Length: 187
Image (cartoon, rainbow, N blue to C red; front, side, top):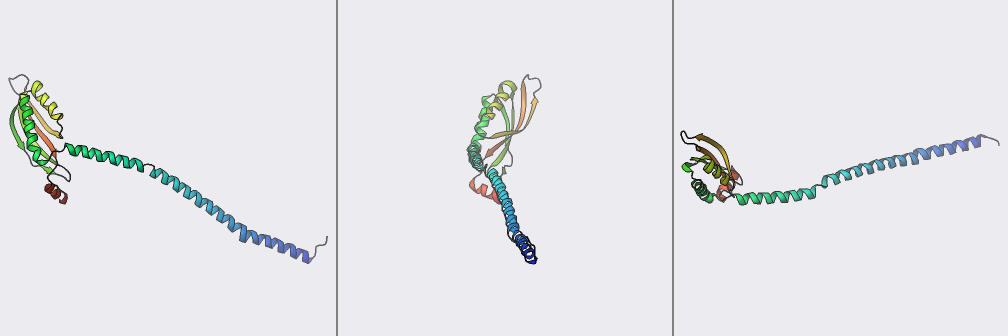
């Protein structure tokens, strides 16, 4: 076979056409395909991350419901402000029922918060520790209202076996009146 200028020119033209096709068609198509695969992988990863993040959404709704029920429970334990006198009377009666002598009961300044208030009360009692004071504290703990003993000072009564004098600060949690609650939210 004879290779002339026409054949060399034709072969060069064919190689140029092949190179041009690769450069203008196959190379951009391959780059687009690689970019699409990278984008697909990126979106799959984002989708997997989204599934992980949203997996707990149903759990959050359940936990929110549980917390709302707990709030309702504790609010049911909060007496109205006008019921504090009844609770004080109940504490006084519990002390007397346990043969404790009530020396003093003094209410301190109440503290108000957005949804509840605290009424601290100083109480001085005296009587037998084992049969009176201990039983009084257990009954106080068993009340269906939220009461906290924030301070307690016990002194042994001289010359009287088992007798103590107790100074307590009780905190009664209560639901403030509607007008007082609005004031607390403003401040």
